[in-house]
Each structure stands twice: as structure tokens, then as C-alpha cells.
Length: 601
Image 1 (cartoon, rainbow, N blue to C red):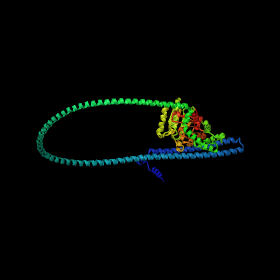
Image 2: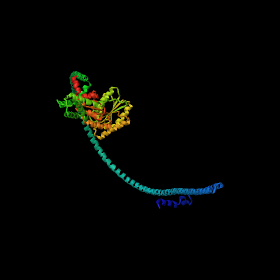
Image 3: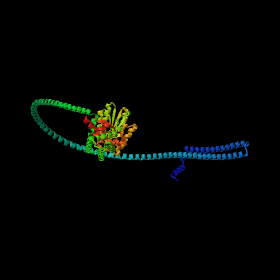
Image 4: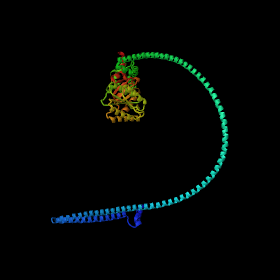
């Protein structure tokens, strides 16, 4: 048996408080018994009702059957009897279920009444025990109080005896003190007389000392007065000398000021002369560029690539026929100049078509090379044209040092000069110098620059920049990105995240994904283009630093392999040195034909 069953059994056996005390049942017990009796009566009524309903149902079925028997044949009667039998069985089953349900409900009601009665009995027992505990506690408190009173009386008696003892001792001490005071008073009177005599002697000495001090003070005041007069005289002399020195310093300062003004005038005059010379030089340079025209500027920018290739061509074909060996040397030369295998082969085939086994000149080779370059590049000549989206989102990508930020700034200056509203986003959050450089271009082009703290999430900055550009109705949003090597997977993944963020804001963006390439890297530009095209969906190219390398032919190799639009080329640091790409002009300049045209003119 469990602990709970034992507890319930004890509750059942233990009589209530009122029954134990007065010999009669409590109110709760009476209510419990009445509820149990009522539940039994209700169960009997339910059982009787079920029996009556069964009799009524049977009589009704029988009456209906007897009424229909007169009109039915034997087979039908048998069927009806069978049906009635089944119905009676079903009804019996239902009645049995109803009876079982009534018994269960009766049992449940009995259990509920029993539990309620037991709970009420337990409550009564707890109340009785509480009352008994309170009575016991009261008796204990009364006993404790009686003990405390007895203890206090004993303490009071003891204190009374101690007080009497202390009073007796105090009386004895007082008598002894009075005697001691009398002796002390006589001793003090003798000491007071001695002190009075000593004070009289001290007063006489003090008077003599005071007279001496007053005499010395008079002498000191006289000396101080003499010193003060001397100090006044010295101060007057010092002020006179200071005024004289100040006058000399003022004179020197005025002379120095006049000298400085004179030197400043000389410097300004010299600066004006130097500025005039510089303006004249710039005017001459501008005049020269105007005289040379667009072709002249491109030729000058590509001079390194052109000169090296022209020298090599002259060395190969100096007094030599165009045979197979010469054509092979020409192909090797063009491949070494980063033109790529396809353009190099087509140039050799074009020359061999009409001039094979004949003497050829440098000019004929340059013309053939220019034709092949123009053939490759002309279909890809595509200026940067706005699509009409607002804001027009331009994403600039490329490796470190390719010239992204400078190229972005130059293009922004063009658009603002045309009356467009431009906003820049400094997506290179890894280099503080990149942000500062973009802010300088923002000031030049009067375009606001959005930036974030160093090391911040670039994609978050891009998201905010697009939202602000939409809110402020900006025409063009130009996004600079961090320079990254194409073989750094984690950095390329971050660039892909920026592209995804842009597309969440505008699924048609970026409207331009511009890859900025450095011409000085040569064939490595092919690897860069392949990687960035896959990650950022490059829509066009801009090649920079063509003026600082002999590898200008790589643009032809890029165009031949990837067929990406070429928007512009950079041939210098100035804003005007970023030129819209022209395939025929580039071909003429790179092949060396342009130099021949300029020399003849």
C-alpha cells in the first residue's frame, strides 16, 4: 500500500474534532452524507426511467407490428419479426450501455461525494489540531512569563543589595576625599604663593624686553624708510631705461616690418611672373593638343607601346622578303606585345594574302596591323550611355591600383558638368586613403560622398546609399569598391554579396558594372576579366595607364576573347585624359600609322 493510501486510510479511521470532543457529527459530515444519499436516489430514479423507456419502446414496436400484420403475408411477417428481433437486440444493447453509463455516473458521483466529505473532514481535523496547538502554545507562553517574572524579582533583590553596598562604599570614599582635599588645599596655597612671586619676576623681565624690542623696532623702521626711498629712485631709473629700450625695439620692429613687406612684394611679383610663364606653357600645350587633335593625344598616350613595336618591326623586316619565317617572327612579335594569338595570326594572314614572298615596308605592316585591330575593336566601341533608370546605378570593380576611384571621379565630373545630380558611395571600407581620395573627387564634382567607418560592412553602406539616392531623387549613384585580387575567394564572395544587395533594391541593377583594368599588368588582365565577369556580371571595360606601358596590345587580346564593350581608355592623370573609346583611332595610334600621319602633316 502506498503512502497516499495509508494517509487516506488514516483520514477515514480518524474521527472528526466535534465528534471526538462532543460526540456528534459536524456540518461538513452531515452535508457529505446528504449528498451521498441524494446521489443514490438519483441513480435509482435513472434506472427506473431506463426500464420504463425500454417497456414503452417494446410496446410501441409490438403495437405497430400487430397493426401491420393484417395486411402482410407470411414472408413479410417473418421479415418484420426478424427486423423487430434485431431492433430489440440493438435496443437491449443500447439499454445495457445506458445502464452501465448510469452505474458509472452513480459510482463517480459517490466517489466525488466521498472525496468531498473526506476533504471536509480533513479540513475540520486540521482546524481542530490548529486550535489545540494554539491552546498548548498559550500554556507554554504563560509558563515562560511566570518564570521570567520570578527571575526578574530575583535580579531586583540582588540589585537592591548591591546598591546598598555601593552606597556604603561611596560614603567611606567621600570621607577620605574630604580629608585628602584639605591636605591638597594647603599644598596648593603654598604653590600659589610661589607662583605669584615668580610671575612678578617674569613681569619685570618682560617689561625690560618690551622696551628693548620697541627701541630696535624704531631703528628698523628708519632703515626700511631709507631702503624704500632708494627703491623708488631705482624704479624710476629702471622705467626710464625700459622706455628707452622699448623705443629702440619699436624702431627695429618697424624696420623689420618694412623689410618683410618689401620681400613679400618681391615674392608676389616673382610668383606672378612664374604664373604667367606657367599659363603660357599651358596655353601652348593646349594649343599643341588642339593642333594635334584627338588622334595626336591618343598617339602620344600610346607612344611607349607604339615605339617598342615599331622598332621591333623595323628590325625584323629591314630589307627582307615576307616569307614563312618572317611571318612567324611577326606573329611572335605581336604575341609578345600582348595582342593575343588570334589577332597576331590574322595580321600575318592578311599580309601573306597580297604580299607573300615580296619586299614589304614598315608602313605596309602597320596598315595591316591597324586593319586587324580595328576589325576586332570596332564592334565593341560603345560609349557609356545612361539607360534612363533613376537612380542609374554604376558599380566600379577591379584589382588594387587599377585606377577605379580616379576613373569614377573623372566620369562623375563629366556628368555633373552636364547638369546631372550624382551621388558617390565609398564602398572601399578597408582603406582610409580610398575614402579620402573619393571625397576629393566629390568636392571637385560637387557630388555628395557616403562613407562608413573603417572596416564596416560595405554591402550595408551600399544598401543605405541606394535608399538615400531614391529618397533624394538622384540621377546617378556611382559605387566604388575595394580593390581585390581575383584569386582571393573571400573577397570575391564579398563583391558578390554587394551585387546581391543592389539587386534586392532594384532587380534591374547594377545598370552598369564597369571593370577598370590597368594596362601595365599585360596578360594578367585576361585572368582578371574572367574572374570579375563571373562574380560581378561585367557590362563594360575601361582600360587605364596606357601612357605608362608598352603593353597596350592587351586591349586587343581582351576584346578578341571576351567581346565586352569598351567604354573609355585612360592616357594620363588629367580629367581630359580619360577618352571615350574610338576603335579606328586606337588602331591607328597603336599600330604607329597615326605617328606617320602626324609627321607628314
